[in-house]
View (cartoon, one colour):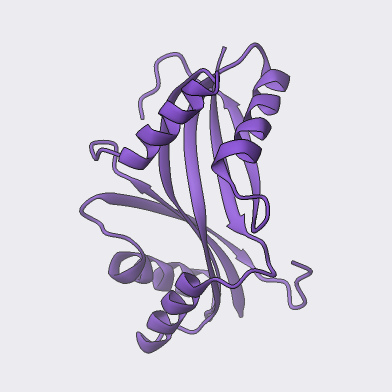
Length: 88
Length: 88
């Protein structure tokens, strides 16, 4: 079975985000009232797995070993069964 | 009113994603059966706006003018009213 996964990787709250701070400063200069900005990663992938539990386990392993740095980043993901003939 | 926005920035389907291809290749070498990987940005922000419509308009403007490159990127976002005393 094919699954579509959406992975959200965010910096842990205690970790500084200089890019986010720069964006916040730029938005403030553009007259947007913005209180905080944090920039993370958004990863979309299509993976093969036997069932949802298997996909979940594989994705956790991939996140821990490759996609994130567990020292400074958190992650969460959503799994959906992929359509066989996706339009996008 | 304060709103919490989650912005998802993705490369347009026609644009190549070398980072995504590298991750896909690495995952394949680690014995994960992955069909495609696309890497985008995930931005969380807290902004001030009069109401949801105003927040929506401001966020669209911020995305068009600063957060994304409309030539190669698409975006979408979710807006929630921010709790007054957020725990995270």
